[in-house]
Length: 174
Length: 145
Image (cartoon, rainbow over all chains, first blue to last red; front, side, top):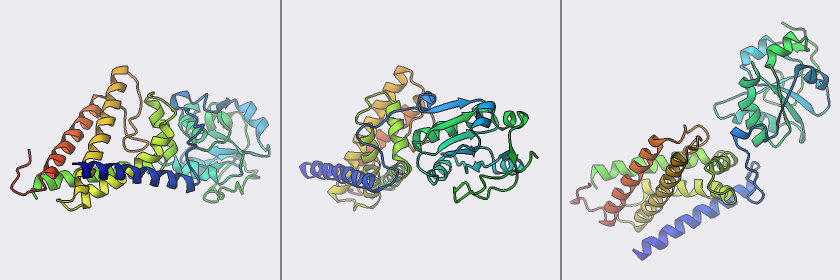
C-alpha cells in the first residue's frame, strides 16, 4: 500500500509540475500571483462599460478603438458598423478571444450585437480573457442603424487576420 | 479481467481524459470557474493550472496501466481523491444556494445541482469499486461488485 501511496503522490506531483511548466510557456497563461477574479455575474465590474449610440458615434474612428460585431456572419454581411471586425463566435467564445488577441496591445474593443443583452456574454468574456478595455453598445446594431451610424456591408475582409484592414469602409446602410 | 472492471477503466479513464482536455484549453476560464465556488481565491489559479494535467495523467493510467500494476491502484487512488474533493465542493455549492456553472468539463458544463452531486457520487462509487478490484490484483476470479 505504501508503494501505491508513493506512486499516487508522484502522479499528483508530476501532473502539477507539468501544469506549472505548461502554464509558464503558453501565451494565455494564468497569472498565478495576483490573479483577478471577475465572474460573469460581475460583468460590469470586469471592465465592460456600456456606451450609447451617440457616444459610440463620437468614438468612431478613434485610433486604438475597434468595433467588433458579435452577430452571425450573415447579419454581418447584410450590414455592420463601418470598420467593424466580425467575431467568429463559437460555443466558448474562444474564436472571439483569438480574433481580438491579434489586434494591437491596448486596443479598446467596442462590442455590439443584435441588442445590448445579445452581446453582453461576448463582451464579458472578452473583458475577462483578453485583458483589453471592452465597451458594449447599448441597443446593439439596430440602435446604431436607426441612429444613423455609419454602416458598411459585405463579407469581413479582416476576418482571420484581425488587422482591421477595412477600417476605413465608407459604405452605406443596406 | 472482468468485463465490468474493463468498462469502469474505460469509462472513468475516458471521463478524466475528456475533463482534463477540456480544462487545459482555457486555464484562465477554469480558474474563474473555481473562484465561482467561493472556497477561496488565492489557490484557484494554482488548482486551475495543476488539476487538468493530473486528470490527463490519471485518465491515461486508468486506461493503459497493466491490471496488476501498482500504477493502476495509484491512479484509482488519485481519481478517488479528486472525485471526493469535487463531490464535497458541489455539495457545499448546492447547500449554499450558489447558482454557478460547474466547470467540470470546461466552460459550458451546465449548472451545479443535485444532479451534479449524484453524478459525482456515482463517479466516487465507481472509482472505489475499481480501486477495490485493482487491489485484488485484477484477479479474474474476483467478481466485481
